Structure formats: structure tokens, C-alpha cells
Amino acid sequence: MAPPGSAHLNFSLGGLVAVGGAVGYFKKGSVPSLVAGLTFGGLLVGSGVLITKGESYQGHALASGVTGVMTLAMAQRFFSTGKFMPAGMVATLGAVGLAYNVKKALEWMPEKSD
Image (cartoon, rainbow, N blue to C red; front, side, top):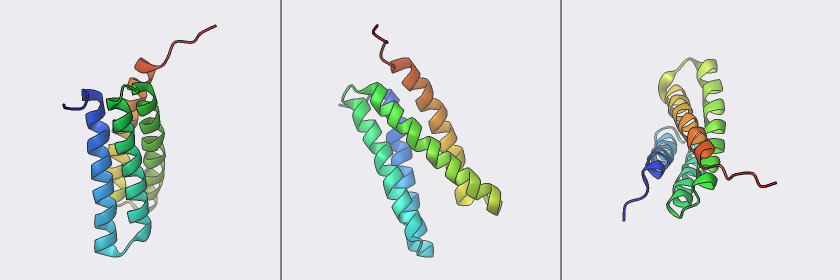
């Protein structure tokens, strides 16, 4: 069975970030790239798993936090180096993921009970 549509972005972004971290490690020997890529990628894949298990709010909230941190960190790096690859690309993808996941988290937010 295919995952729900709202999980696809998080699975795709998670895989892309994890692979990007591994590429950074193998090309430049960057252990921080590997650790960050696997950590953020794993958390994004985990958010997709939560969504597929019917925990849409929790999954989108987790992905919102992950993509928010990723966007801020990589945007800061992009502005300090001026290089679009990889920092600007990751910041851009993170911002797209952040906007999407915040929208979805708000849609799935549980009703307040008095």
C-alpha cells in the first residue's frame, strides 16, 4: 500500500538529505555533513512513518521542526559563504518543506477541549 500523499514530501526530502550528507562525507570527508544528513534525513523519514500510521499532526509537527532548523542553519551558512551548493539548495528545500508541513500540521491540529 502506498503512503498517504502528505507523507511523500517528507520521505523524499529525508532520503535526499541523507544522501546529500553521505555525498558530502565521501567527497570532502565532512563528518558534520554525514551526521547532519543522516540525523535530519532520518527524522524526516520518521515523520513520514508517523503520517502513514495515522499520526498526521505529530508527523507534520516533527517535520516542521526539522525543516525549520535545517532552513535556518543552512540559510546562515549560505549567507556567510555565498555558495548556493549545497547550503542554498538545502535551505531552499527546507523552506519548501517547512511551509508545507506547517500548513499540514495546522490542518491536522487536534481540537482544543475545554
